[in-house]
Image (cartoon, rainbow, N blue to C red; front, side, top):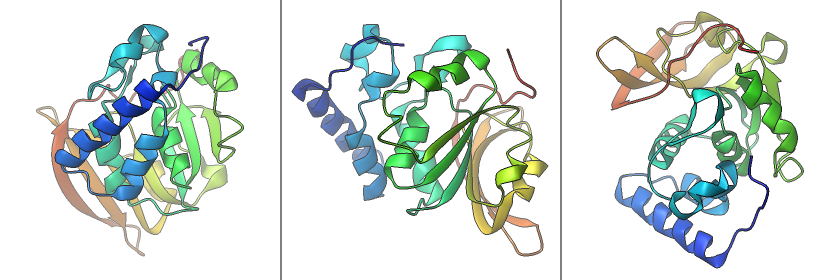
Length: 219
């Protein structure tokens, strides 16, 4: 984790440039763009990345994981159709950047991380007082958080080998799940809408590249 937190005029200018780029690439949800513009992405990276933190690409973080490309964060968030006070289950806390984007939009975020090294970072989270609407959990993402169900939305930020049945069970009827599914040839972004009978409709979107979604917890 970084030791100094300064959001300079230069950083803010670079964020505005990033938002303009995301708009050019097809992100149209102004609430998503405003959230990304409000959040200092460089705070979620080692200070060595400060000069390039607002480039539209992924960067390494601890435990062999990555902070997702801003376009990917914006794309998934836009598909999720976040409303204020939505109860969102996020699988894969990672750097906490995606969690913060959701919280800035007014969602109540329940986020699970399986890597203990990354989970432990939440105690040093620079925005923990600003965003009390984020709750952090250490656990197996495939299991979800049954004690807190149902959820309005589920967001998976790793490539799932299949649609996790327990997460679908924890999604309320009419709720949305957004996830990349690895079919062996590509990782296709899907949006699922749960129906009253427990089945769902499926929409397929662009291909992406994510780290794999793994079972269990890594201490």
